[in-house]
Image (cartoon, rainbow, N blue to C red; front, side):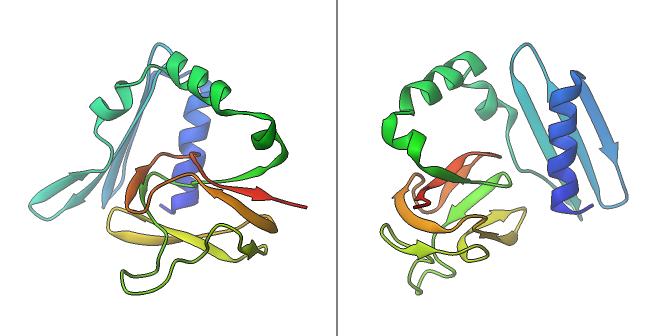
Length: 161
């Protein structure tokens, strides 16, 4: 199953109102649970002699959804409304550089074009390049290097003008 298919499945379950969906295939098992205003997503990949759980449920449940909405409303100021966000397409670990000894893909003040690689997100030992879907100038980097990120979490603010 491709990463885009997993993302679409998560979106579909969130919109459908289902409480729990389990999908098992040869090499992996996905369980998506939703509850009273909270979303909990577990992706488990079966590996010989080990099971890797990418997102512990306790971390997601630590912040109720109502607090997340309040925080996001408070963070949006006039400047944020005029900028476009580049968001994380997956859950994983955010890296600004292709490797520790290389310079970052982009810095504040750099111009990006559609298709430019802006970061890497590691998920289940796979390094996924994130490409810009917009052109503009990087105004702010919203995530620290080597930090965990959630699906659809803003990573960068871009001034499209």
